[in-house]
Image (cartoon, rainbow, N blue to C red):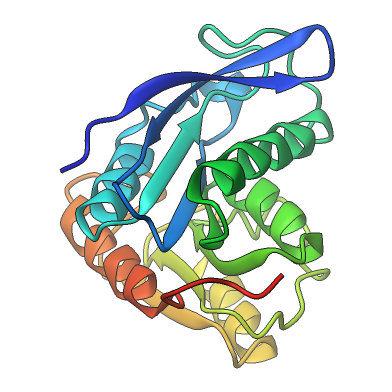
Length: 214
């Protein structure tokens, strides 16, 4: 597996974010991965984030995970989900330059899924989205429309923040989404990281190969 290297993401003149980049020799696609809520202990070393990174890197994709502002060695303070969208956009910019025209995708877990959806929905470069345990009980995802790109939504059947009824309604309203329920998993996927990884891998294999149109 391609080792990750530390990188710094620059946002404006006075803010930088801690990140790790895994870059194969000739990547045809890359994935930015957003971590869960900073105010509840979320960071880029979360086991779900690490699992997603390992799976994608194992399939030969470039990966970039990072700490939102105010987390770890990243500068700044938590910005209520607004500044964090700028953080994710900066990560996408950095990865796009690193893969030189390869297909760009974004993934996120919990709060990170909300940020990934918001940024991915409006960024025309995005060729795939993976939303892991999106907190449908806490946030409105009504803005998410069909981008005609491989889109995964995966959650556990015992997820209190993404209840099965909300998950079913989300899926019914978006037939283009690949919706995967991990049996017996809660919001944190304790003991269920393997089936989660299988779902992410199946999504990653659907990402377009070759060069994305610009």
